[in-house]
Image (cartoon, rainbow, N blue to C red; front, side, top):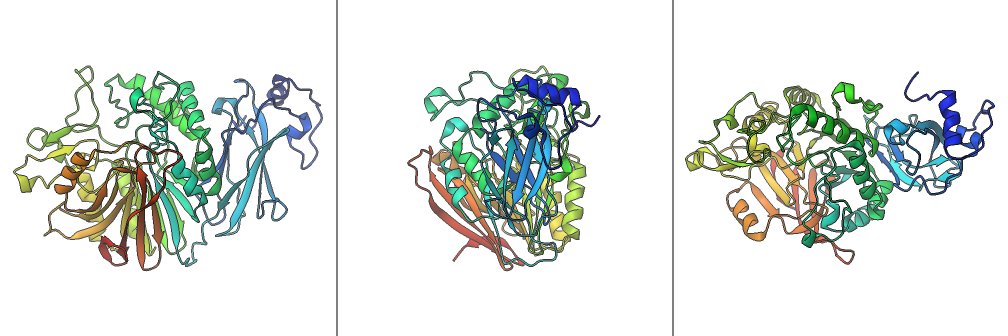
Amino acid sequence: MSPAQPSRRRTLKAALGLGLACACATPAFGQSLGQLFGLRFNQNPFALGVASGFPEPNGIALWTRLIGIKDDVDVPVRCEIALDEAFSKGLQRLDAVALASQGHSVHLWPQRLAPQTPYFYRFLAGDAQSAVGRTRTAPALDASPAKLRLGLTSCQHFEAGTFKAWREIAQLDLDCVAFVGDYIYESNYAKALRIRDHNAASVPRTLDGYRTRYELYKSDADLQAAHAAHPWVLMWDDHEVENDYAALASARLIDAPTFAAQRASAYQAYWEHQPMPKALKHWPGQDAAAQMALNQRIRWGQLATLWTLDTRQHRHVHACQQPPGGEGKGGGKLVTASSCPELFDPSRSLLGMAQERWLSDGMQASKSTWRLLAQPTQISTTTPNFAAVGGEAKAWTDAWDGYPAARERLLRTIQHGQLNNVVTLGGDVHRHVAADLRLKPNDSASPIIASEFVTTSITSRGLNDALMAAVQANSPDMRHARSDERGYGLITVTPSTTRCDFVGTPHPVRDSSVFRIQASFEVELGTPGVKPAA
């Protein structure tokens, strides 16, 4: 029996488990099981909102999750998608079952849609109806769109501030939101620094714990509005599982089997709460070691191809990591070249060798005007070149600085392919950054290979002014860097330029905060490197 097809007995149990009467006839054509059973809910089961994502020319991912349902009950759900908000034009209906084993989440992938077209969608179950979402498909693969507008976002610690940035993003004219990591935070802020609370002293380690954390974040009205307004393309980073984890290695130095179980729970909760690409129609389950091919390729006609890159699931463990059972904490740390020669091991990878090959092959085969790489962190270095300072510069091992050979392989792929249209998009570091990417970082004699835009956080605190000044003083490749403001990046791609407007407001974000454009930079087609925009 397929996981998406519950038995007749279980379907009847769904109706009875909700305290409802049921008829045992075969549903009429066009009638959902929910309508047949006349399901009635005591509270809104769609209180976490709706979402869409990973647009294709003829399809899109749609999501919702029902809450307040008994743990052993599966619920029939219908999705409607149409060209107008009244659902009277071009209506499609898709039926699904919200499985208890998957947190009553619903993932659907309507096809037969028109390219580059806005659509409206909603979910229904019994007498309940979700909010209406608006989404849009990608252009046809052979189309030549005039522009692509992305909202670049990252790092939304619930306790660090309100989600007012999402309120603004919901009102923007965007083709897509690109979220590049730390959708939830498993950790809690110091009480004195909180704007609001997780309402949980414990850090989630189990499926129930992660589900509860997502329910809190998804209950935020501003975040729901941004999901309902635009399709999203998502990539995770570390806080969706545990700060600074690497593949199946915990930064807490716990044993691998225990952490693998925790990671599987975190991955399942992530899957249950996001619109997943069509390639991930089914949660792989614990038996598959919770592997998810979240790295994807999204094409926007002939104008741009966007690759989403996973820097957590396949990476090598941090260089000079303490062994299991060691004293203290694992994860990222500051090391010098002389104290940690492992940094330069050419076999070490941040993406994993399979993902490196997938990206290299894809970039070289692409005929797009622009190649965009969306990944969770900052690629440009935040420390001086090792050789230029006698080998004693410090590198943060959790970032690309901790994997210099992997970074060089990526840039050499771009250089050897003569790909003069690569722009990387990142987050994680809680600062707005516009940077040049050189084969030898911060060496003015080394050619600029590509360009980088990094967004600050939605809410999470950044470096203080003194530390940020020290980082920038040691990093001439960073043409712009500010860590004092929260916000997002507005990316506009045209046939001739890729531009980033850095939007920000002082930390912490409150409902009264006002966002403004902090700075604007652009890249000209065929000329790698960032420059102030006119």
